Image 1: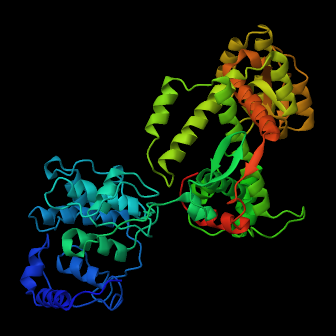
Image 2: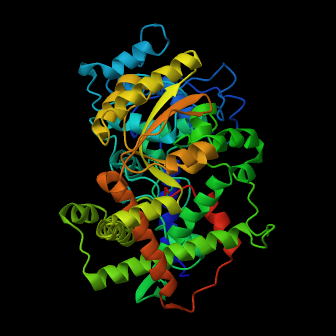
Image 3: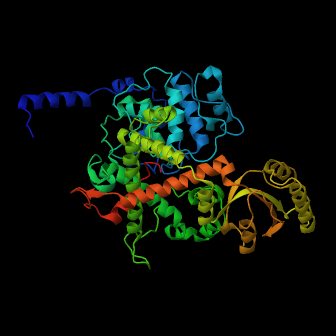
Length: 554
């Protein structure tokens, strides 16, 4: 390190002394809002990191304490309070006094202020219309940007920020560039879904109203391969059939398979919610376990550590990490052989796929521009492969039988709101009417809409959803035949069996199944070579890092 000359040190000392001797008025001149009152102090922020910020927003009349003695810096900020703060900030910055008429509910007059056309807050976020729950970091950013953007000198950039790992919203990037937001780590991770506290809100608002508090910084570029595997993302870790698998791609796949393992083992991962897992596993909810807990019980598992012991072997002798890595390597091999075979057989993306690929060529979501483009290309190639895998009638029926599926239109009659005998009679009436038009599935659909309790659509039903006697009856039908009235768990069922070759959606699904089988076979036969960087990581530790990483989204 070079030493400064004595002359340079003297000049620096004089500059520091002059800065320390600046009158309060000079510091005041840099603020967008003047001090309206003195800060006497809140006991719960004294000598803490956020006290200077709390002091600044209190003196400007922007935030209040929860009492005369307490600020509650760790308490969550409600969306209603955030709406009031945004309205107050705009009022103060445009010459108003930041006060609003008493209203019921208490935030109504501030809400109306933000939505008033004359206020010129353009693009207020949707939740301003119905402010409920706690405010997230993303919510606060979405409120601040439309308040500040139309006003001069409020968002002057002092940093160069083009992307942060977990957000690409231009409003957020503008707040980073202005030094108002800084992120939660060296990469600038935004964590927009995290509830924001009153103390954090004070810090952000203080930087808004006092530019001297804004932060200048240079973000460390996020490298998924380096973070997860400890190997730079551009490093080739293996070559499969001539396709070079980079560290970043392998890390991204590991992130996905780790998330899938936790999702599929919710009873082990979150034993405190084991009872809910039993409920979830017993039904086909059409949503993930995380979504089920959130929408059913308002339990948010985002950022919650699971109880998975990644390096502990189970009864089969394999640890969760070993299972996840096996799935990851299989996925990597399938992507690689897809690329190599597509190149050899000239699978080319169509126009719309090319447009999608071109739009993906930016670094976002924690992924590099290369990885985003590569994933888009591979998705297009997979679609092309599936489109070429058109099963014959024999193949279609064989795939359905192997997977315990049957194709057709179910007509369901629920006995919950009617006498079982009457419901069964209605089902029989419909069955007889349909039987008078054999082979006419459009007429069966019409009758389903008229008589049954469900919409008419061609579906793939699974044997696991039915008792063995019911399934045997369904499986024995030939295409075009109608089942007798079948009883299943308090529901009566009439089923029209459809030839899978007659339904495009079913054939598309079966084509994807054939494509998956083809990829799996190619992967098994592929030639694989690994670089010197291979295996320099601890498998269990990598899984744990993936689990702790809240982005990229998977």
